Amino acid sequence: MASLHVFLVGFLVLSCGVIAENDLLMEESELLGLFDVMASLVDEPGWSELHPEPCTNTPWPGIECQVGQDQDPPIFHVTTIHIGPEVASPPCQPAAKISDSLLKIPYLKSLSIFNCFLTSTVVLSPTLFGALSSLEHLSLQSNPFLSGDVPSSLGILSKLRVLILSQNNLQGNIPGELGGLVNLEQLDLSYNNLSGEIPQELGRLKSLAILDLSSNDLEGVVPFGLGQLHLLQKLDFSSNRLNGKIPSQLGKLNRLVLLDLSQNSINGPLPETLSGLEHLHFSRCGLTGKIPNSLSSLNNLTALSLDNNSLKGTIPSNLGYLPNLDQLNLSHNKLTGELPFSQDFINRLGERLDVRGNNGLCTSHNISTYLQTRTCLDKQGTVDNVTCPPQQPYDLKGNNNNKNKNTSLYNGRTSSSAPSQHPPSPHLIIRALRVHPPSW
Image 1: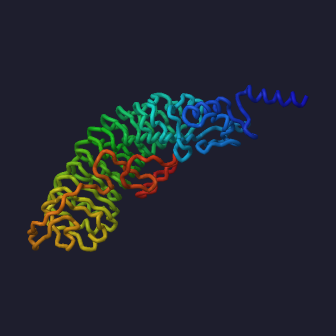
Image 2: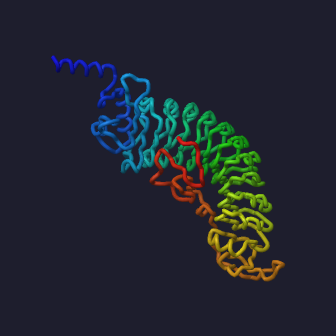
Image 3: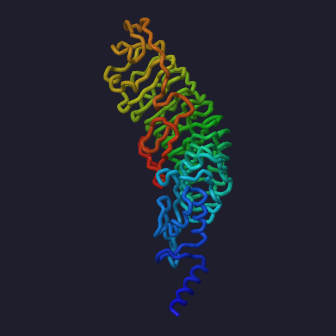
């Protein structure tokens, strides 16, 4: 009789659509949905048999669960799925795909898939992610065979705080519907093949701290509406085909730490009121005129790149008095006159000071060969005929001005590198440049 009683209890539990895990329960449809999702991604045959109770007795390092609130009896729900090289090697099977069974995991808050789609093409579903109403963090990164458009349906995920779709093979336009993500704090669509113009609707993302659209094929002008993003700390549009003037509205971004519009066809004037800037990069932008004296008021500036433009005139001497400046690249312009920096400043920056390729520039210091400039012979700026060997220009972000750069604020990196084979965990810790968006 006792065994019959146990059987009936078990039958009732299963018939109600829940499965016991220790003293807690898990909805059967959600568990089976997780099994389907993992079977379509990871290179681990029999995953469901190895992890029949993924929230308790047989955990997997990329799965996190939480106990649902206001549920009696308490029920486990899957809230995080993270696939990446630090979890499994290889992280995914050769024919990996994203299963529609994600829809059976309605409490999912964080989904991150790194270095997964490496051999077989996977087209990003236009509707799948839009149905995950609990999603707060979506990161699909470093997947060279992940293609398709950025889904416009993402715009209805009102809880989304982090959207990273970088280092993939996505095409098409950036959907204006993303402007509806009122809680979004980080948007990174860098290193894809996106085209068209930057939508004005992005100016509605009032919670945004990081906006990175670098290394795409975007054209048109920088939207003036971005000047309304008062929490913005990083703005990187480098390596696109943008044109026109720098919107004066960007001068309102008093929290901006990094501004990079390098390798576009943007011209000045440079913003004069960005007092909080630490990194300012305008390499290969077609800038003309003089270096504005207003840059000398950017006391927090640590890196300034104005190389490979058509800037004329003399270098403002006050740049040498910026207390935190550690990298200065003015190479390959049309600057003239005597280098106005002190010997101490030149020694402190060392190779991080680059003024090569300015034929009218000279220096009275005894290290003219090191600086690759002519030596000034007298106070009138007369120079001798010293020539220096040619050398390929570089900018202060460590790259050689090509499309295959990867500038990142993550994990303390501010230099360029190839797309990472070991991307950061889904809970990104942004350490560099003192960029501190609200925690997620």
